[in-house]
Image 1 (tube, one colour):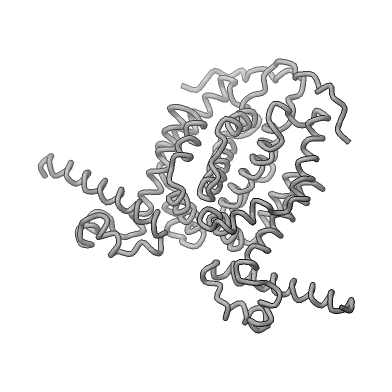
Image 2 (cartoon, rainbow over the protein chains, first blue to last red; image 1 turned 30 degrees about the vertical axis):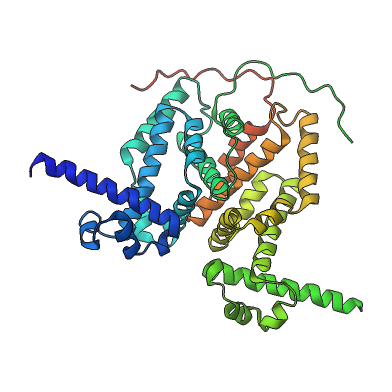
Length: 199
Length: 199
């Protein structure tokens, strides 16, 4: 197959994903009918389903792209960058991502697929966190897995807040999450506040 | 009005809320039709709407009850008790609670009402956290409001995980959240781990 066809395919795939994200964000998963996808993508259903076997597969690919973007940011930058990216994300799309999470419970096929998602990146994150533990940057009395799950928990909570129309105060959350997962420093704690308790 | 009527009204209200919670959990907000509510409650729509002005008002009352139960647990016990309560909650209902959160963004009336929710309990929590700061139990370099928001963020993330069919490892989360919000203790940090970094 000639090279141009490969890049043509990648471009088409991108076109479908971008348009589908808009449709899902606007109408939710159920409301994203094939007719609406066709109209927004500008391709027939035959052409679309030549790239993805089903609407669910498009949805899955978008959720996986988001996850990988977040993991990449966490690896290359930090958790604050992930939260800032989420604050800038469309609340409608975050609502659709949350819809996807809910589908995991009731769709065993989707759940099985999701449990094998992005193994390279997830492995890379586990190694990254493990090295941070070894260097004494992260606490080591809690497993790498528990730290990763906790970061996911906070990010999913942020998705709920942002999709409800309440942006995240990134600085406060980063500070609190830092204290949660970093190794305590050897400096003495600051003195107790001098004021008597309010009664 | 005689006393018996008051307690009768309270019982009816309870009956409606319990049955409605089942219907919302089973069918979602949109799918919870008045016919389904009538059937599950065992009362006519006339009787139901004698207690609540609308389906939305029933939904709001349920979300508020959940919030108040969580705040009460946080005040009387601790954050772990809140997470354990959520683990025991029906994943379907948590999904409906998340649907409620999403409605806040697009329904200005609901949002305005929610921003004035349970003022006594929320005031009580702010005072409780303030006293913990004064006693040096909670960190005081972050506002009481930021701590409260953070606990809400973690709880909402827990709702996402549980409604997706992944229960929370309460012990790990409580440990991490504790380090996030507690005042650092004056003890020196443990020594760095002796093993060389994996390469």
